[in-house]
Image (tube, rainbow over all chains, first blue to last red):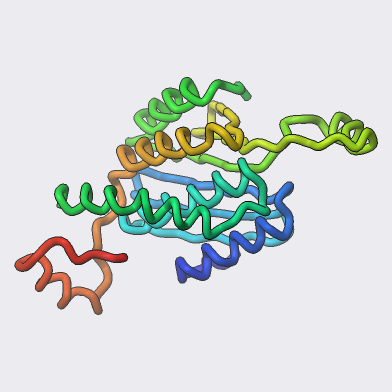
Length: 103
Length: 119
């Protein structure tokens, strides 16, 4: 299996994969603290999409993807994506301030 | 496989992360599931009753597996706590390195303002 290197491509293709077959698609995250590595995997048992990183900034992007998948899985694949992104933006703003102060 | 309520699950997940800092990994899987067997699902289908789906969350450290599920009403609260746990424990990841072409900009940023980050 080849890792997808572009984050945006990974997000797009995984969401597509889930929409195509919501019932057999799973989203898996593996975190290995001792090596500082994070691997994300989405598969429907036919196709497998993976993304690997050791960057903290990608963990922040992953948080958004987590939210997308939580919403899609709990509410169903027909849920309006613009609704999710709209909520995210609202949540993202106070979070941004928090990051700014920390750094 | 232990099916827990969301809050005990999050507590267990936290201790899983804490126990795997020196060695080992943690896996978390999200899946859309009706939490029913195929037979039960087929029964509902033939009875033309709607199947209720929830988001099933499973976590393992290779030895122990825990799971929970969230529905449309409670997933937002759960995902917020989940994100907090991840943020607190994914501390081994690198902070902006290895990107040579961004290095010049980085140096400038360090001396100047700290605000401009990604959108």
